Image 1 (cartoon, one colour):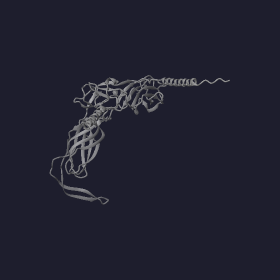
Image 2: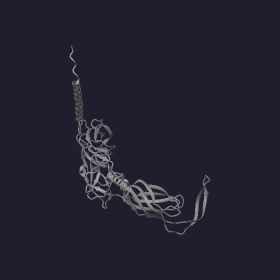
Image 3: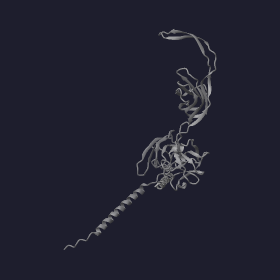
Image 4: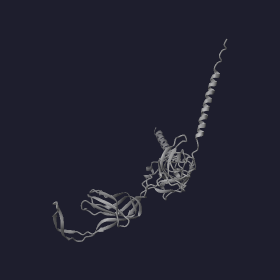
Length: 437
């Protein structure tokens, strides 16, 4: 009995491995587009941002037909990666801004009453105290190497315990004119383990600036603030950049519209329609349908030639129509298609070189959970694709209406003939009527 249980457990484990493996016979040659992948040194988990050429070749809406193969044709473990813009971390050296530590030993004061009877300080008498070492009033950081949206400033600092301290972060390009970019109140309880002080900056624009960090409290500080180092986290201005592909359109139809077949399944985020024959601004609508027998539905509207693209909000379709609503195009416009950026994580566990393959309508989804690859304790390295700029040549949709009508008529005639044959056979089998006297 024990032997049988062990055999059953082994068979179950084998079945699990087989189920987790990529489909047998997943050959790179079966995919429409194959591109070489350049790994970062060190192998391991690699992150790969997908260019427009890949998104414009996908045949599934969720990119389940994207594979990374090694030199032996084995599919590597992959996962969908977060497409948020990567944070840049810059370590900044603190430069103290000093202030004199002059003190005044008070020996007397004079008060006077104002018109409302409230006392006001009129004079303060005293003698200067002994001059001490200068104090640190603020810290200056040279962040001129950074240009982008500041996310947060992380300080490795000693702070007085038991006091609420307001930190103010300011930026300046010339050390003369300062603008506030963040303010945070930090409280460190007595006995707490020293931790980093995080100052959120809420995406403030930093463009070759100095940063100044100052502080104040409601009462006199019980201990000085000492900053040992700082890290500025930022991201490129504008956040995540869209992935685009340019497309050539066919000639205008007689009614001035343009119908095209969409050769990919990736959802479209936006389109940018640009006049090519000197037109200024042309109001347009973007319509879609998935079948020649369906009515057109509106996906978006805008102005061709304007600075803003026409948002389609992630529509996946097989046919698009570009339709001028008032002024007409004199020639087919230029079209730029924008996709939501996509990225993959994959484990480079095979034999190089590696190849990305895409474009297989029946490919199964073999993606792993992102935590399976991202949770290795090491930041993924950046891989790259050797892909030329993508440009599509779109064609009008194939006319399927006449073929479908002919097929329906053929089915109807065949059914009519079959019914006629059945009626004839039934009539032939009926016995002949006896002759009448």
